[in-house]
Length: 357
Image (cartoon, rainbow, N blue to C red):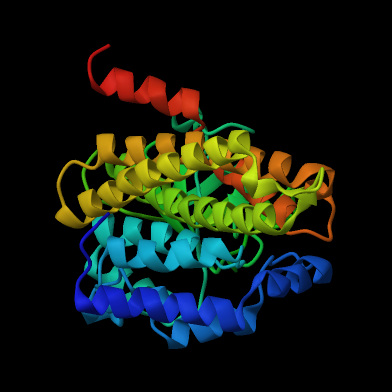
C-alpha cells in the first residue's frame, strides 16, 4: 500500500465522505433511469470541479493543482466504490495529451477549461470494437481530419476530442463543423459514442515525442485500473456483508468454510491489485518510463476485477443479477473497463513484446 502524504490522506477521506453522502449507488440508479446520452449528472460533475478534482493533474499555471496521478487515482477509486458516473478519468487522460504534447497556446486555450470543469475532454483512439492503436486509419489533410472513432468514452458530452490519426494526435473542438456523434449503448449504461469526423478542423500536438500516444494510453490505463480497484474493493465489502447476514440451511453463509476460503482468496488478490495500481500511478508521477508499470496495473486490474465481479454475483446467488441488488452494476461496469484500453491478452502480448519476447 502506498504511503500517502497528509494532503493525499485528506483528499482521499474527503472523496470517501462525499461519495458516501452525495453520490451513493442509488444516485447512479437515478442517472441510469434518466437514460440521458451524457451518462452522468452535470450538476454532480460541477460539484467535483468546485472541489478541484477536475484539475488535480493540471499544472497550477493553467488553473489546476498539479497534485499528481496517485492523488487523482485515490479520487477515482472512491468514485468506483459507488459506481459514480463521472467524466473525470476521461478528461484527465485527454488533458495529459495536452500537458505532454501541447504548445503553450494549446495549453492556455484548453487546460484551464478542463481544470474548471467547463468542458469535458475525451480520447478518440479506437476505430473498431477492440482496442487496437495499430489499426488507426483516421487521417488529416490540409488541417482537416476525417475518420470515425468507435466507443469514445464520454463522447456524447465532450467539448474537446484528442484524436489519434495516422501521423499523431490532434485536438478537435466538440462543436467544430464536421463532427457528428452517434450514441452507443453498452452494458454499463455510460456514454460510449461513435464520433465521425468529416473534414473537421484539427490542431496537431507536436510535442511529447514519437511515443506520445503510448504515454497517454499508459495514463488512461492506470486510471481505468484505479476505478476497477474501487469497484473490486466495494464489491468485496458488499459481498462480505451479505454473507454475514444471509441464512441458508439454518446457518449464516459466512460460517461455511468453503465460502471463507473464497473470500480470503479475493482479499489477497485485491491487495495485490492495489499494489499494482498504486505502482502504476506512482510511475506516472515519477516521470520515467511508464509502459511496464501501466501494463501491469491494467492486467492485474483486469484479472482481479473479472474474478471479484464474477464471485460477487455467484456468492449473492440468483438475486445477484436482479435490479434490486447492486451487484449487477459492479459486474457490468467492470466488464466494460476490462475491455477498455486493452483486454488482458492484448496487454500481456504488449508486455512480452516490450521485453523482447
